[in-house]
Length: 263
View (cartoon, rainbow, N blue to C red):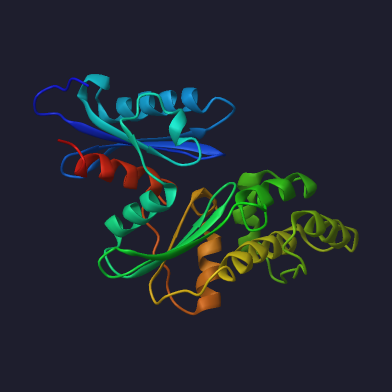
């Protein structure tokens, strides 16, 4: 694609099953524009709208684009992409960009969870992924919010108000829903039930794999529910690293690949 002299921009697009994210970076790896929107039923259209808004934020247009890399569940639906990369690779690259050390990444997304381990040089040591069950994902919280008759965006605030967390016995979305109804019938406070749901999420994720000394948490669920990070810190007994835009690390990683592979 033709570029204007002195303004070559690199695009990273992460098309998740729930949300599509796009970032605009320059050759010096500065984040100039960003956008997040629902993926909906047309991943290609979602990616185009994300690109337009991210470019607008960056004060640029498509003539400035040097290279685009897409990732995520719908990465092959991005018609304007020059290349694709796996979401594991892009999340790892994006997190290591912000925290260049040996890290364990916990990514809690709308439809799946990932745990990725990197060594001090950023090389991937291994990863585990949960994408066959809603347990521990954003979909789990989305299922529970209408049962509690509260907006999804109020869950973080309510969880912080809890004084007597309800412990749920199951990770399963279906069985947890039954437990939630039982606790409502018993008159338990909504805030205590919500904190119990949060605990189920981080318990499910933390049991997927062991954690190294330095832990990074990312993903849309973390971005909208930062109290999850505090609860995880209490469980593991140490501070957790969180990038400025935890929902964008996959897109940032894709943009970094675009910069590296630009001729």
